[in-house]
Amino acid sequence: MTNLGFALGTRRLGRAALAAVALLGVAASPAAAQRRPDSLTMTCVQARAFVAQRGAVILGTGQYVYDRIVADQRFCPWPQHIERTFVRTKDASTCFVGYVCRDGRPDWPWFDD
Image (cartoon, rainbow, N blue to C red):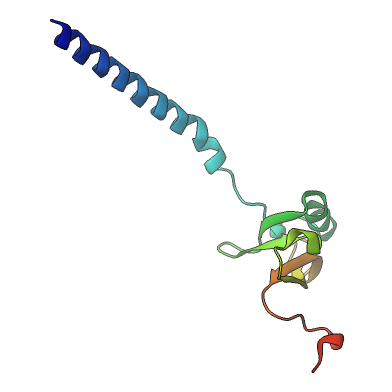
C-alpha cells in the first residue's frame, strides 16, 4: 500500500512540474514574439536617439537585414573597435545612427606601419 501511495504522489508531482513548465512557456511567448526595431519605420532623428538612449541595439534595416549598433566604444567587447555606420530610415537614404563593433586593427592613420 505504501508503494502505491508513493507512486501516486510522484505522478502528481510530475503533473505539477509539467504544468509549471507549460505555464512558463506561455508566459515567455509574448517576449519572443516582439518585433525587432526597424530603421525604415523611424525618422533619422528617431533612429539616432533610439541607439543613443539604449547604448546598444539590434536594429533592423530591411526585411531580413539587421545589425548590432552601439552608441560608443564602451558597448564593444575588447579588443574590438568601432566604425561609423549609416542606415536607411523613413526620411533619409543614409543616416548616421551610431557605430558597429569590428574585429581587427582600426583603420586610423596613427596605426600605419
